[in-house]
Amino acid sequence: MADTDFSLTGLQQLVDDAWEELLPILMEYIAIPAKSPAFEPAWEAEGHLASAAELIRSWCETNTPADASVVMHEIPGRTPVITIELPAHGEPTSNETVMLYGHLDKQPEMEGWRDGLSPWTPVLQGDRLYGRGGADDGYSAFAIVTAINALRASGGTHCRCVGLIEASEESGSPDLPAYFGRLDDFLGDVSLVIGLDSGAADYDALWSTTSLRGGVNAELRVDVLERGMHSGLVSGAVPSSMRILRQLLDRVEDAETGEVLLDRFHCEIPADRVAEAQAAAAAGLDPRNDIAYSGDTRPSSTDAAELLLATTWRPTLSYVGIDGAPNVADAGMVLRPSTTLGLSFRLPPLTDPGPAAEQLVEVLTADPPSHATVTVTIDKASNGWNAPATEPWLGEALESASTTYFGHHAASMGIGGGIPFMWMLGERFPDAQFVITGVLGPESNAHGPNEFLHLPTARRVTASVAHILHAHATR
Image (cartoon, rainbow, N blue to C red; front, side, top):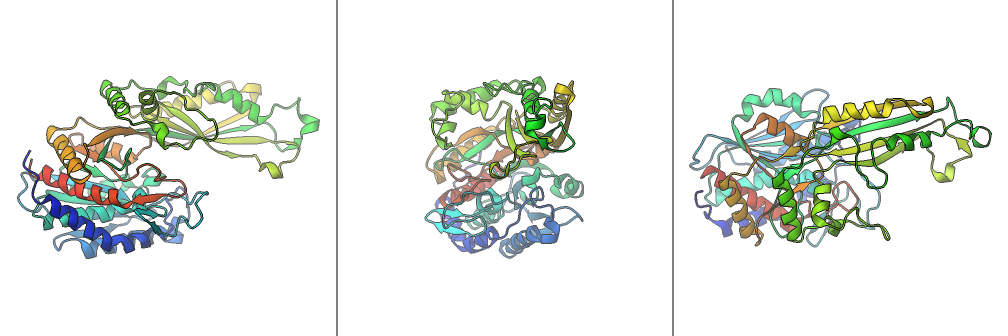
């Protein structure tokens, strides 16, 4: 690999200065309630996604180099996509393209924000910028442009770069395939993908994500009556919908261990990922360190490596919603006619979600208890992703960037969440290298209350992106 020491100290200072200047516009973005379409069906009429996209497009157009091109792409009925094209700079060793990815749509508000904080009011407290979407993932477009500006000003080199900022990631990226057809020629020969929508186990190193889980989301509904009836008159003659649900759930999940019982939901864990989890645990990484257990609640295992694999490479089931049941304070003595549960399965990275979803429907609807009416609706089935083997030049670049800007060795881990776009890119560019990183470290609480962006990490990740771009162009 070519020497990446073009002006490392100067690069970080340029990045730091740029971040001080861009904070006000990032705070403007946080103030926009740009919820993803899955959480705001009237997103188009409300216009918040459009406002956030225009704010980012305008800032990028103003702050990119003169040879850059910033375009807002729009398809009727679909969320917008922003592309940022930057021609090669300096003397790169190839005509390849780097894609840099982020998104601008947000999760909903959620309850539980601390006094003085709220999702749509940016608050800067020390090194933390609170508010929905700053860390997940609004910072990404600003970081991409800042990294390239600092790289060029430091005398560095980069291949052709294409930034892609979408607006439906939190909904599973349903709108991206429609844009891919239009952007195929534009994207070109992508040999490196840098995604900025992931997390970090701590704020002390540059973390890269090696795997992401897929998912199957479903609604399970049980009907036992045409209308609610007096529980004193009919209980005993009518099976409760909740009891039927309990029997059905025992078909798919072991109530004692939480193990998913459906074989199509599992995959063999690659040996290198097992070794990665064991090494991470030996180095002190433990999922329990960032979990706020209630009372005396205990984890499913006391082995850190096993917990890392359980949260990244094994299927799980979460019950994320319930319909048909009133609040306890409003509940009468009524045997309810139906109950609907929202089921969220996380799938191992190599599991095919299509056959898994089919098996789920088959198992839950076969021979229903008491001949109750059982309906299963698959809301979403998404693929996971497993990173290709890291080429030597990239491994060296990650290590050099981490030690230079963070002062510690580079680190890697699997993530229990999903980024559907990564699977799409892996299928489209099977020979590309991937750097999936981000700023979502301990307590940053993406999707929940008190989400914050850790600003020192954002600056260091930005400088690391520039560093990797130079290494890629000069390898």
